[in-house]
Length: 41
Image 1 (cartoon, rainbow, N blue to C red):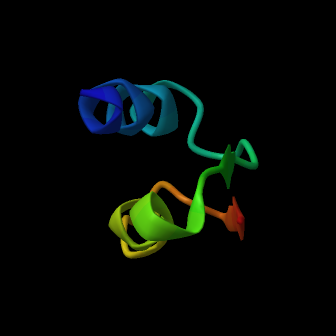
Image 2 (image 1 turned 45 degrees about the vertical axis):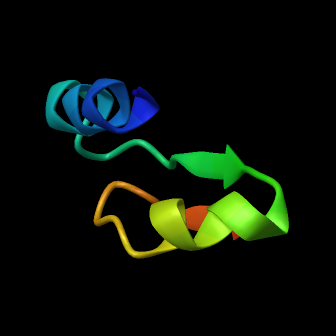
């Protein structure tokens, strides 16, 4: 449910740095998305 919100955030602020803090078992879902600049497991 957070992926559409993060996509909208990237669209609104294209030059921002978006870091995702996630548990390892869900990190792969965010790591492959183009809006994710940094993945912290």
